[in-house]
Length: 406
Image (tube, helix red, strand yellow):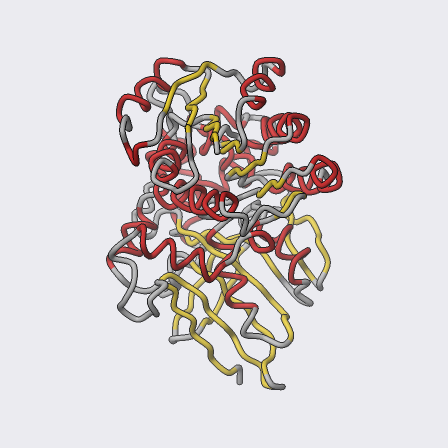
């Protein structure tokens, strides 16, 4: 199949292209970007990888005619052009119109809802679209699926990802090579401001972000993480119907969450835009740093929480239990989590692998947990991250811990 990699030269897109080049069934990869020089540079760097032919193409996703022309020549599009609250719907609509299968790493909850609403149009067009197939969302959704399957009844469901606790590498995504705020940083500002989607009392509701959630999970781990706008509560609510609470959490130090809260207040008050807040995050201002210092004192830290996990509470065989699904404690897992480009790009390509062989080619718009075979995904992930298997987890690199409540 012919693959169009939109935004391929970006950090996450480049990883996805590298892995996709070695997948069976890929006959050509077109690396497309508004910056043709960057696209050509990636093609040169990956020339011969997996023996898959590659070429570069100029595409600006805001040019509908050019976008559709590029999609017309592809069987599948990997869309890594963000932020998705600006460009996600544009690319998905064009993919449906051209009959092109679609995968992305959308990490904004509002466009995720709108994209899921295109399910009927995608089914009518015979298009399979998987939305949010990265690290979080993506791996987090599949960890949640593994946890939920251990329960007969689901009460609460949380997914969590690291910001600055384990050297997750997010700071590398704050600025583009030209010094402008990166799409990931702009997205982050969007998701720590305004109201975000969470589940409360079994219903999808809107709350302000950066609220503390204190958890005690199996293996004696406990600590506090903070809510953030992300697609997981939206899609997991649809897929698994937790009766209680569900949210996406950041595992973050008190100092960082206090600074984010200062930015949140200034964005909500109109003193900053997402772009100017992202620039401030890359180079913190002395005044906001001073304001954050006072707030950090009252914040609780992550304690011994794992850096990246899904935690589900409910009942099994009539007994209340908590299930923790996490990547096993191995050097490979740590290395993967520490490099967000790898942690996001590899899952995108492994989602593509399941679409290529028909495992995940059901028409419609789907979140990862309903389209991707989780067991196979983690086995594939372990093969692509050689140091991941072993340690405390099984051969697929995932540790599942269950603890009775009370």
